[in-house]
Structure formats: C-alpha cells, structure tokens
Image (cartoon, rainbow, N blue to C red; front, side):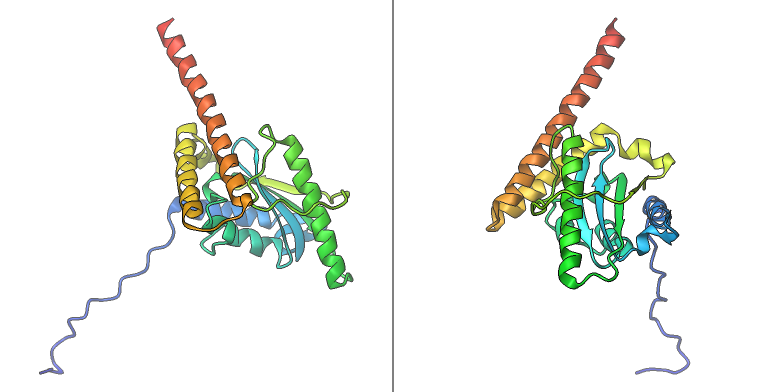
Amino acid sequence: MSDGNIKSRKSPRKAIPGVSPDTAALRKELRKLLGTSHDGKKIGTYKWGVYAFLDYDEEPIYVGQTKESLGARIGRHLTNQRTDAVAMNVLDPFEVAYIRMWPLDLAGCNKKQVQQKLNEAEYTAYKELLESSKLKAVLNEKPPAKTQLVRLPDDVEGCIVPHDLIESRKHPDVRIARRAATIANLAKVISERSVNTGLRTTLLTQARRLLALAERRLGEVSGLLLDEQA
C-alpha cells in the first residue's frame, strides 16, 4: 500500500560516464585532423574522397573510398559506429596511428562518373601504398578493382595519437598482443562461416604482420640482453 508521504525508494539515476580520457584525446586529435584546411575547405567535409589508415610504423593497413564525406566515413571506422572491416576483425582501430586523405571534387559528375573516378583514385592510392609497404601488403579483404592509374590530388596526412600516448600505444609488446588477439578473432570468424578467399588472405597478411613485429621485438630484446651481459 503506497503512502504519498513516503519518499520513493527508487535509486536516483546515475550519470552515464563518458569515454575514457585516452579515447577522448584520440577523438580530439581526429577532429583536429579532419578540420585541416584543404583549398579553403575542411578536409573532413569533402563529400567524395579516398583515405588510408597506417600503423605506428607507417605501414598501410586499410584503403577505402567514400561518397558520404571523409569525416563521416573515417569516423565510423574509428569510433563506436562500427563498419564491416572492424566487425570482421579485418581492421583493428587501435593500430591506426596515421591517416592519409585524398579529397575529390566531383561536383557536376553523374553517378557513373563519380563511381569511376572514386574507383580510379582508390586503386591508385592502393597501388602506391602497396609499393611503399615493406611487407608489400594491405589488409583490405577485397582489394580495389584494377583500373587505370590516375594522378591523385594533394593529400592531407596526420597522426591521430596524442604525443603523450603514442609511446605506450606503439610499444611492440602491446601491439603484438593486439595483433595476436585480432588473428584469433579473425580465425574464429573464418571457422564459423563460409567465407571468400579474401578474408583468408587477410588472415595470412595479419599473421605476416605479427611475425615481422615479433621478430623485430626479439631482436631488440636480444640486443638489450647482450648489452647487459657485456
């Protein structure tokens, strides 16, 4: 039986906590990069463009294109609005340290022309990054369709990891653990579904990336031990 004079026993609603300080700092750097001026416009506001994610060694991780704006597309990859590449464990946002963006002005082009120019720019960027990669590999599950190579517009590139976080986040032991976990999750996806060869190729590329980092780390640690024993 209720009594109007008795105060409700319902617990007061607790404030929903915000993101962690590290995540907030990363998002701030991302907003700053997307706000970079390019021909009088903020780079993130360009409706059409091509983008690439690079890791702490500036190795290419992922190349994509967008028709919804560079800021919106990149933000969906790197914030809580997940994309297929993240959900399928192809792309680990933690590994993204640098972003390159090539904005395209396609005003006046029809739908078919827009798609063709985006495909050409994406394939050109992909080829350039593939050639510059020490592993000669990018993690895209489906490499861009082959087109003619075109001249890309001037790009905007920047680091999205704050200076005070980059040393801890790029530590090889941390990255080795992340890559091993990503490989395990990706292998689990493959084992539970009928997947194309592209995803299996991505798994192999991730394994090569892990091996290269683990070998480099072993060399560093062995060198330190030799110095200590000398």
